[in-house]
Image 1 (spheres, rainbow over the protein chains, first blue to last red):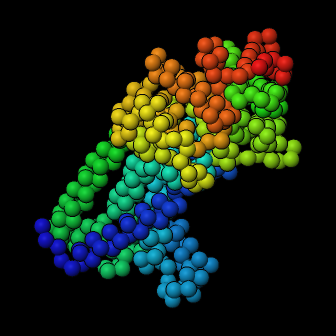
Image 2 (cartoon, chains in turn purple, brown):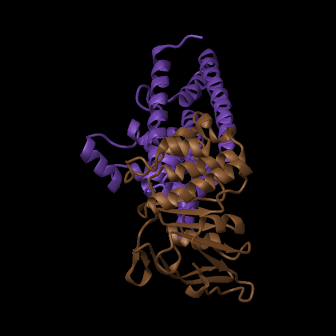
Image 3 (cartoon, each protein chain N blue to C red):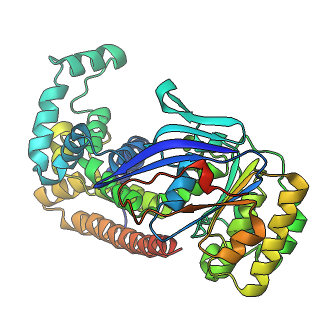
Length: 228
Length: 223
């Protein structure tokens, strides 16, 4: 299995996109999932539904709306162009924005499950030992939910690696800028370069299997913690 | 010592605690039938029931005055609370559990070595909670509460699941703590012998005649 520079570039863009998407989503979703789990208001239920929407929405629909929202004529697109000097659609920033929306539920669901399984009673113990709510969150809740958090980050990473529809809609197929692995495979098939398509697909398949094995191991560990 | 006038509503039930005990009691015993609200009373006093409405004053400290919107968070009440179930932190070993403290409690509590020895947990220090028996977990939980430098101690049936020899040793040690350090304590149990041994006065919470409202008055505390 050997790769040319365009494929290596697609690897790099995919890796960069997946790492950034997972990191940003973890920073947003950990507090959001905790808040949703501890809040029963109508607003929280509405937000929960909106967050889940990308699961049932066809990627092309999400990509289309995002493409329209990122156009230079819109406030978002225009402001981005003023700030960075480049347009949001058909750029790496554009596909990053699309990935954040598309992978949002895949980060949220394992986190919400981890927080649901978390026994809040231990927080009473932490408070009685002098830990403030913030201190208890960082010293007790997060470490006890760490397997769920790692699962969420991995799932988010793997899902971003496999993204196709949204990226193609909002980023197009620009080698070195927006061409990720899944789009490169599509491109190779279109040009009937099946060797390239085989190699790239095999790499993604191996990656997906390894990710799932790790996620399942972490799930077991999370259940062992819950038994304590 | 303790002045509580608090209401707490659950679906279909409202608990109303009116309770005043005389000064001069270091350890207040609380007994009553299962489900009569002993644990809830302790949780209200400790600040773990944030929906309770009313006043809570313990050992000259006003911890809650709902009308004045005054509520001291549980983490700031300087209490050591031993729950019925150990509630150890599964990600920490026994030593780390015992040393767990909030930022405001940097100084070590009652003599660490003595607590470890009395509770007989030295051989458990490197173990994880998952590898402890129920009685061992409970002994670690008591050690953790004592080592957190509490100014007040609250015990909710703390000796459940602990064998007889350890029970006697722990009760003796708590009695020593009470006399040497004069730490105000509340001790909940349904076992009279435990309460007789450690407490200076006992309140009997019994709600059988009024299942939805519970009124406990000062005359029920006897020194």
